[in-house]
Length: 254
Image (cartoon, rainbow, N blue to C red; front, top):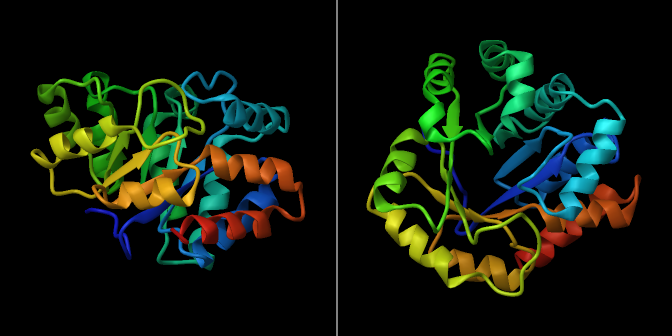
């Protein structure tokens, strides 16, 4: 089932769970939902986040130092699901933490926590057979990344393998701020539209209201990650929920 976006563009908000701590992550998630986030990506801290830029790398390092685990992330998911039953909740992780936890153990625990799906950033569709089978068995949506450099044949496979929504990368490289939304993003979304009726969310570098407005012209949702994590880092512990709520309101102002 596709994930519902209440308006266009929807907002997908990424959080590194456990930065600055578990309680604040939970409060930030709820604050984000209350100001219009459609989906929260619950980031599992990882010691080698190679796809992420320096902001999320620092957040992940801090959370890893606090020994935040995938179990903690799922506990946050369960609490957020109870508090905000209609929000979209996606676990965002590298493959290794999920493998260590156990693929089916993860699927069972995620379903029990009220999670809608997962995005494993370094798991390709070529290697995702068992994962997709287990996700389907436990009624969870596998979400895959589509890049501007992908061939049409590969985009078709990604689109067919994805459920919930398709995550279109606005540019190649790591996560982080950019000046403008790359023109490749619009072309990528147009190419994906040929192969899926699922919502398409665009991420990597979305950091201000002009970016969100630009994405809304051709995609269903904008994914905001590094800008959110940077706001938390700057705000500090107690002010993080308010800082994120303020940022999201600004992103909607365009």
